[in-house]
Every structure is written in C-alpha cells, then in structure tokens.
Amino acid sequence: MRAMSAFKTYDIRGRLGTDLTEAIAHRIARAFATVTGADAVVLARDCRESSPSLTDAVAAGLMAQGVRVLDLGMAGTEEMYFATAHLGAGGGICVTASHNPLEYNGMKLVGRGAVPLPDADFARIRALTEGSSDFATAKGGAREDRSAVRADYVAHVSGLVGQGIGPLRLLVNAGNGAAGPTLDALAEGLASRGARLDLVRMHHDPDGSFPNGIPNPLLPENRPATAQAVTAAGADFGVAFDGDFDRCFLFDGAGGFVDGEHVVALLAAAHLAAEPGATIIHDPRVIWAVQDAVRRGGGRSVLTPTGHIFLKAAMRREGAVYGGEMSAHHYFRGFMACDSGMIPWLLVARLVSQSGRDLTDLVGAMRRDFPSSGEINFRVADVPGTVSRVEAELSGQARGVDRTDGLSLDFGEWRLNLRASNTEPLLRLNVEARGDAGLVAEAVTGVRALIEA
Image 1 (spheres, rainbow, N blue to C red):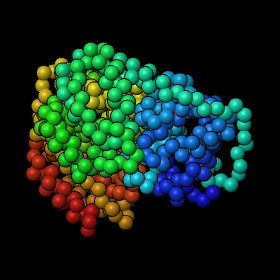
Image 2: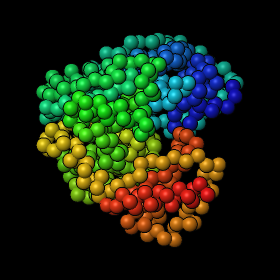
Image 3: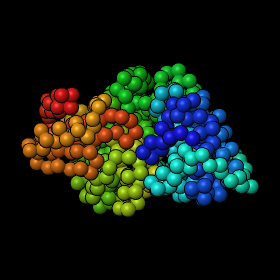
Image 4: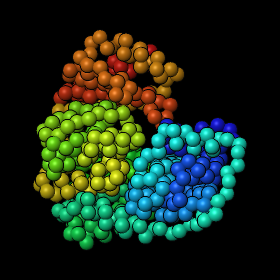
C-alpha cells in the first residue's frame, strides 16, 4: 500500500475514501493484532455514519488474526479505555474522528491496561499497514457483545466521584455525539448513590449527520448555543461534549465559557484538598492559574509536553493524582491515568455543591488575576523558522525561557507559549498576564505581527 497519511503523531485520522477506507481499516487492525500480540481487543465506535462499516472492517481484520473482539458497540473513547483494563484485554481500538469534519474518521489505539502504544509499536503498525506483504490468517477469532460493560464503567466512575452532589440543575449538550446514552446510564447510577441532579438535555440523541454542527465546543463560534441554553434553563452551569466525549467543556451559570486552564486549576485544587502534597501534571501552554492553585493547595506542579501520550506517561512516572490540559483533556490516577470527559464535570458539580459557591464565583478570581488570550492558530509556511524569528526578537527581553513544549517566554507580567500542533499543520499561540487583560491584547498584537511578518 501507499504511505498512510492517516497516521498522525499518536492516532489515526483521515479523509474517508482516500486516507481511510474499509480496506485500510482492515489492514490496520491486522497490523495492530500482529504488533501487540493481543488475544483479545476491545472495540468501540462513535456515532458517525461511516463508523459502523469501518468498525466491521476492523473487527474482521482482528478476527482474521485469531483475536477475540470484545465489542462495546457505540461508546465513548473513555469507555474503551476502561473496558480494555477492566476486561484484561491486550489492547483497545475506538473508531472515531472526535471533533473532525464529517468527511473524516479515524482510530484511537491503546495497549494492555489502556496504556498508549510505544512509539516503536505505532511505527511498526504503520509500516505493516503500508507494506505489500499479506498477513498470516489465524484461527480462533470471534466477536462478542460486551456492551453490558457500561454498567461496570458507570459503577467505577460513580465510585470515583463519590457522594455529595446536588441539588443542582445542569444543562448538558451532547452535541448529537456518542455521549447521550452513556450520560443517561451515568445519571441513573449517580442517582442511586444519592446525587441530586436535574439534567436539562440538549442535542441529546446520537445522530451521525450532526444536524446541529460538529460537536467541538473548543471553537468560539460553537459556544453561543450552549451559553444561551444555560441561561434559558436557569442552570447552575452547563456542560458540552465533543463527539467521542473524551472532553467536556464548562459554562458558568451566566453562560460564560470557562477557559480550559481554569478548569485544570479547579480540578487540581479539588484533588489537593483531598490529598495534600499530591503531584499535579499539566501542559505548558497557560500555567499561572494552575500553578497558583497547586501552590495554595500545597502540591507539586510538573510540566509535560502537550498530548495524551506525554500526560499519561508523566502521570505514571510521577505518581500524580491528576493531570490536565487546557484543551480539556483531564487525566485521573483512579481512571488508569487516562482521560475522561465525564469525571471532570462531576467533580466540578461536587465542588460547587460542597463549597456553597457557584461556578461563576469559583472562576471569577482566576479570570481577574490570570487573564489569557485563548489559543490562537496560525497557518505558516515555515513553522520552525517562524518560532526562531519570534525567539530572536523577544528572548532578550524575557526573564525565563522554557522549551518543554515549543517555546515559552516569561516576561514577568506576561507570558507566551508558541508551539506546533501535534495533529494539524498549525502554529498555536497562547498569551497570559497577571491581572491585566489589556496587556494580553497588547502582547497578542505584537506577537501576531512577528508571526505574520
């Protein structure tokens, strides 16, 4: 086969019919089974219209290698993570393109214990997929319905979050993605533990045509519908999910979007209240609100490059209780060090319930003390050259330089991070300041001029 452009840094994502076809999916599955040596693989899919046929092709490829396919049906990526560990499978695959446009699909792959595949294994899977050699067929393959594992997932997540939630009225926007059925099951499980949640459901039913737009609340243009629904419902706060619900996004009771770094800071503080001195992992894009929360909680803050493989490795290496990225990926020691889109909003609901403070109040001080720009994307012809130009122009004025991920420059009263995307041909800029939103705007203008020069 030709080179597989669908293989990204640590997952698979491509255009249907060209980068990703049923034949390619079948071959990827056979390569996955060959490299991992798994005798059983958990398989899940999102609700995209192209996902059932691709999932069938993956299942057929795995069975041809003698693998028992433990099929969850339509389920979230985090349910695949959970089931891979819970069932003792040798690996897991979720067929999903998350928040990508309709013409895309992809796969997320993990090994035993829901641990990310080593780079060498991922490279071997790609090489075998691209190769011309046939795979040897093995006996023993079968496809088993394991959708009932959702009940075990619900019990596990409910147990992690514990009791003490509510009474709260929440607006939940599933975006017509895969979140709806899992959310219903989770709500029932939480109610049995005494949670008092009044959930106002929006765009709740899975619909792979996404009649209300691709669910990607990270994009500012996608937020007003949820924000307006929060205030219309009189909700305490709102939650919106992406397509495979491994990410959730929060809106306060006034409909204001809660920036990702502020959610990380809230969750860090919540964990440190329960486990003083614990280690918190976070990415280096926007850090001051998080570091302030960790310092006040008596914890230890550890920076790691952006991306789930780096966060998960650091979580395990450092024994961290929690890790968070401003892009809304949140990782939990009690959830196999994996990311979940359901646990964060439940922890925030518990925090609001037990603190007696609403979400607007909880994030208000952070918005005031640590304003930020949000992530600004640029398409440039020469990413390394552009970063070098910005560094040459500004590093002499900086008090500190950090290269954990891309280029971070600390000027005392403001800070920037400039990095190439792991998944798209983009250069990403984040700027934050200490208590001066005007300084953020001024700095963005200056850096933008350098990038676009």
